[in-house]
Amino acid sequence: NINKEGIQKKEFHVVFKGYKPEEVDKFLDILTVEFDRLQKSQRQLQENLERLKYDGNKESVEMKRVIQEALVSAHKVAEDIKRKAEKEAEEIVRNKIAKEEEAYKYLLGKKAQLEGDIKKLNQEYEDFKGKIYKVVDDFKETTSKLADEKFIKIPEIGEKVLDIDKIKIGEGAEEEKLIVEEEKEEEEEKKEELIGEEEEEEEEEEKKEELIGEEEEEKPIGIGEKEEEAYKYLLGKKAQLEGDIKKQRANSGL
View 1 (cartoon, rainbow, N blue to C red):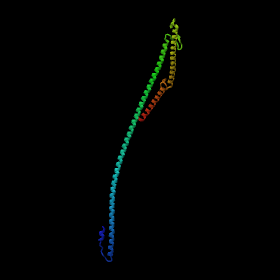
View 2 (view 1 turned 90 degrees about the vertical axis):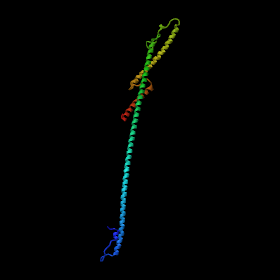
View 3 (view 1 turned 60 degrees about the vertical axis):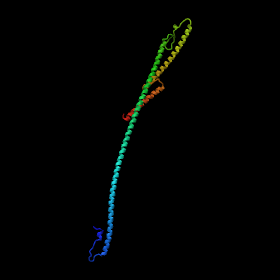
View 4 (view 1 turned 120 degrees about the vertical axis):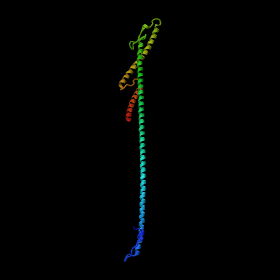
């Protein structure tokens, strides 16, 4: 191997007509210096190369570690996000179901309430109708009693006959007659009032029958416009609630 010491210690044999020893020595000195410089440069380059390899390996290991940690962290974050999203989704679904069940129960309660109100209104209508029939029956009974009175007979409505046989004749007969006439007038007034009420009731009953024929389903009649409007309103609300309940069932799958 050629090195600095080998160049400096190299010996040449002197022959006839050979090179000048001074020139050879000078050239060898120059060659030694240059060779030494090249060796130093080579060693420096080798050291740099080794250092670069080491640094590269070190950085590669560090990079791998960083990448691995980043992957682990990303996986953990992804799992946390997924778990949180699933939890929030379950919470949303649970709240949605609870609200739908609450709304469904509310609608059922409103339906039951309206059905109760309608039933109550129907009962009030039946009671009112019974009162009307009772008034009519009482009127008929009163009219029948008037026909059986001792002093007045009513063969037909509007006809008035005075039973003279029941009036005392003699002393004070004129006064007795006046008393009887006054009583008769009072009875006639009562009878006319009852007849007028009966006619009004009959007209009202006819109107009720006409209204019953016009309505698609039974509704209160003769109980006043406010009661009738309330009844119609309750029927409408009942139908609306039934529609809402059907829609709620369809949406919630109940």
